[in-house]
Every structure is written in structure tokens, then in C-alpha cells.
Image 1 (tube, rainbow, N blue to C red):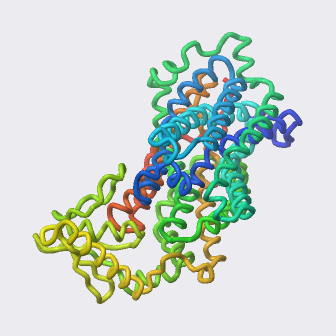
Image 2 (image 1 turned 90 degrees about the vertical axis):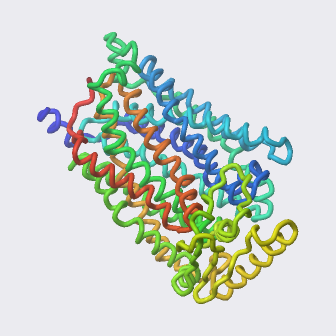
Image 3 (image 1 turned 60 degrees about the horizontal axis):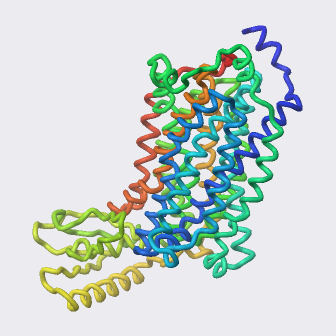
Length: 554
């Protein structure tokens, strides 16, 4: 091993290795572009495909459909991981790319709820499931393929280019969305133009397929095939034997789960937080995220390269630890920078709901059927939640009506116990007008004032969040490849990666927003990534091995 390490110190990437990295990366960029378009356009999708419910519920349902694509990724990992270990890496990710591209194109053609009714969201979810299955097979193939072409002392560097593809895919989707929004104008883009980014993906699909067809099979797999040592039953070998299954579990809970929540909190939740909670207009929020991504992207390669020198484990766990320690102050600083008027109003005149807990419902309605007008507490909280107003809860005396305090002013919510029917509806309307007037007087803005945004500080905070993403994500592919034997590598590494990123990460926006809606605390949703990241640090420190000097040609 020492001789091998010394001889490779001055290794320079050959033309063949450069082609492998470039072709694999470009193809994966396209797949992430497809996958992320949905997340970026969730606001439009909620209006078109979930228009049968109220706006807040529609957005949560749209995020739920976004998460559905993540939910099936582990199943895609099982299906395509098995195929990749049986028949080869190259052909498997060609198939996954075709499924992903055609599903994305179909979203651009799909009629909305007003045209075909309930069939519209059902078909949309089906297309998201196909995308998730395809992505479940794509990443493991691309990462394994590149790693098996890389020299032992440059595996972190080479696979870091695969790690960049997720951010490049998001960045490309951001640029396309920003470009069409700017060219068409908000009205045309909101009416029909949001479909164009989905439709143009068919051109990217053709280019990406052509590029990947130029590649040969992985040399490691080709050698196993010639020697007859490929696995005959990858699933049972990978998950039916404790010797390998234990490393699948260690990889999931000691590395990937934390990596996933840091990634999705730093990119997607930050974007949704800007739009939905801090009320920054969508186009501007996209631009701020794009700038932060552009500044942070080179650090994927830096941390991938660094992991070849000092190891993968402590870079990944260090990023998770920093996230757990700093997310709350970072997002509070984000609020101050993006909407200082809102932050000032919250500090000057905090909103407090005083109510009997027995008189309050759980403020989350995933099917949009509950109007929350049956009790005074629900009437008060529903209006605040619908308008994204941060509030705290105070326990009231049993049987008392809910009261909303805004600074020194207090309003009593109406209750069906006192009035009913048309009289109740009129009382609720009057209460909501008075509540909105009180919020206006206290300085709660309806939207972020572009002139008041501290853009330099805002981008700096978003860059910091992206920097944490690069720490945890840059070295992860190399670590996962190195943990597992080559005959079942595709299957073994794909499952923990996609359970972590598909479930722990993919459900983060939906879960965090549900937590915010249920409690009224705009920061409460951060507990989800903080707890998962902290747990990963503890588990990883105890059980996760260092892998960066391993020989994977076995």
C-alpha cells in the first residue's frame, strides 16, 4: 500500500479519467436539475395542481408531493442498485436518466386541477414517484463509476465533482427559472411560463444521454465480470448478512442522516424560509440563493480534496456539529437581514396567544378540510398561521376564550359558544379585520421591503449555510464507496444514501413547516435538522470508521 501511495502522489488525471468525471457529472447535473425544478416552483405547482384547498394547505401538499419523490428513492436504490451490481454501472444509469427526463417533461404538459380535477394531483404525484425511483438508482451508479476510475489518493477529489452536481443542478434550475421569470414577467410566468423549464428539459435529456453513451464500463466491474466474481444476489449479500448490514446502518445514522438535513436545511429550507416566512419575493429569494451557491460551490472540491489528505470522517461530522450549534442564531440573523421590519416588530410587539390548551386544535391540516373555526383558540391561531405571523403560546384559565396580545393591545377571539351561523361568520370577519389592523399598527409588514434588505449580510449568511453543506456533502460519496466491497457496492451504498437524503432530508421542508404551523414559532422547525445533525455526530464519533486510505479494488 505504501508503494502504491507514493507512486500516485504525482498522478495527473488522464484524458480518460477527465471524460469519466465530466460525462458522469454532466449527466447527473441534468437529473438534479429535473428533480429540483419542482421544489423551486412549488408555489406555482400548489396553485395549479392543488387549487382545491386553501393556499397554506396547498403549499404544504405541494411540499408533500415534492417529498414523495424522496420517499421512494430508497426503493429505486434497491431496484437499480441490484441491477447495477448484476449487469453493470453504465447501462443502469442510462436507464435512470431516461426515466427522470421523460417524467420531468410530462410535468410541463400536465393539465391543472381546474381542467381535470383530482386526476391532476394524482398524476403529478405519480410522476414524482417515477423521478424518485430514477434518482434512487442514478446517484449510486455515478458515484461508484467515478470512484472506481479514481486513483486511491484522489478518490475524494474525483467524486467531489459528482457532489457538485446536486448544487449545479439546483443552480442551473435557479438560473433557468430566474431567466424565464425576468424575460416573461411575473404575470406570464405565473400563468403558463412556469411550465417552460420543465419542457426544455427534453433537450437536456438528449444531450446528456449522448454524452453518457460515450463511456465504457467501470474497470472494477469489468474485471469482476471477466473473473466471474460479480454477485449473484446483491440484495441478500448487502442486507441479509450482518457483516455488511451493520456498515449500512452505521453509514446511515453516523454520516448520511446528518449530511442530508444539513444539505436540505442549507439550500431548500433556507429558500422556502425566505419566501414563506420572511416574505421575500420569489424572484429575489432565488437570486440570493443562486449567489450563495455560486460562492460556495468550489468548496465541494476543496473539502473533497482535503478529505484525501486528512480523512473524510471529521470533516463530515464537523459540518454536522457546526450546523447543530449555529442554526438557530444563523436563521435569526437571516430574519434580521432579509426582513428587518418584521424582526423589529416581533421584538417590539411580540404576538402572544393566551388560551385554554383544551380549547386548541393541532394547527396542521394536510387535507385542507378543517377551517379551524369551531373554537375561539382555533379562530385566533388559524389567522396568524395563515399569514405567517410568529407567535408564542400562554396557558389560559380553563374555559376562557382565546386572547391575542400584540404588544400592549389585546383582542378577544369570538367563540361558537356565544354566536353561531351568520352572526359567527360576521364576528370572525370583524375579529380578523381588527387583528390585521393591530398587526399593521405594530409594524408587521405584509411583505419584505426590497429597500430594507441588507443584501450583503443576507448573502453572507446564506453562504455560511452553503459552506456547511459543502463540508458534509463533499466527502460523502468517497466515504460510502470505501465502506463497501465492490461486488455489492452499488446496492450497499445507494440504500443508506437515499434513505438519508430521501427521508431525513427530503421530508425536512414539509416536516419543518408543519412544526412551524403547529406551534406558531417560526424557528421551531429548526429543531428537526438540529437534533438529527447532533445525533449523527454522536453516532459517527463512536461507530464510523475512517476510510480514506482504503483500496477499493476488491
